[in-house]
Length: 151
Image 1 (cartoon, rainbow, N blue to C red):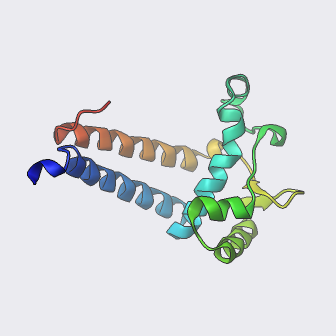
Image 2: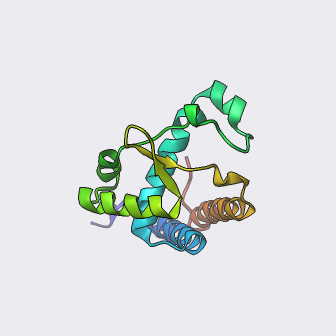
């Protein structure tokens, strides 16, 4: 029975829980929003960046730009946000309306949403990303300290 659980499972789950808690703390502190709003913002932010970050030519051209042009930035529908998060559509609709009022996101002509600006120029945003990077490094060290081999 003891062999039913692979030896990496519990230590990896523990380290992953620490990482998730670190990230939740960092983003809720920085944005001063609840986790539901953070989850929605994360999906929208990912879709805003995805088209150009994953295109090597566009990434090379825009990676250090203070503002990435709207024509290469992505957007996402509220329905897709609901699908990605598993949150009810009405909750997503209401929360996106609230986030639009704060100016963090905006609707485009098709009704899709995206981040309103590149926040990467904001030193506070850069510090937050650095904190998350540090949390990932702590995760990697925790795995090693618990004897979990990384692949």
